[in-house]
Length: 190
Image (cartoon, rainbow, N blue to C red; front, top):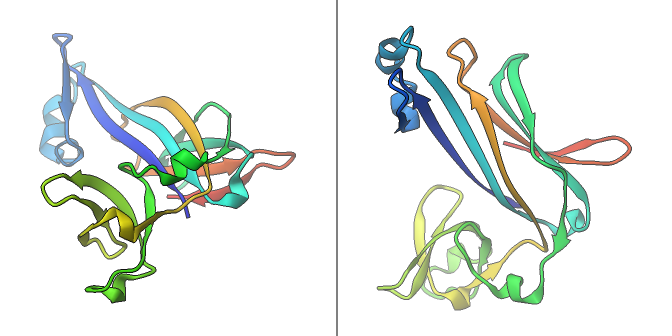
């Protein structure tokens, strides 16, 4: 398992030339789309690809991220720069940060959660615990001593990909992790 830190932002340039940000749910609202159609508005989708945490078998590999906007054979496709993953340093393995994949262990009060894998959401300084999102969606506050950072390698992408929003395309984003080689192989897709 691994994680990819991403941020998707939708921006439109209105006829006066000023930029406006909208949340995804308001962009997908048909009344918002109808109001802006034919007004010279240019909708843009920005996908920021940041840091990729990977399992040990993907250490020291050439990788690339493919982002597709659309589906069913009708889509726009863009690629991140090609990068090489590297093993995590001992310091990085011990460093907890937002977006890290962790495994819960040595819990006494909630022992049924031992062995579960979750995603670090934030540090709660008032409780001195990390907020961890578990696979079922619930968030648990867990002490650092009960967390083990997963992943043995990292890849820093630092890429920004922009798409021109098209209301004719299905509103679907697919992100693929591609291992580069003689034959490129998709190793993960979301």
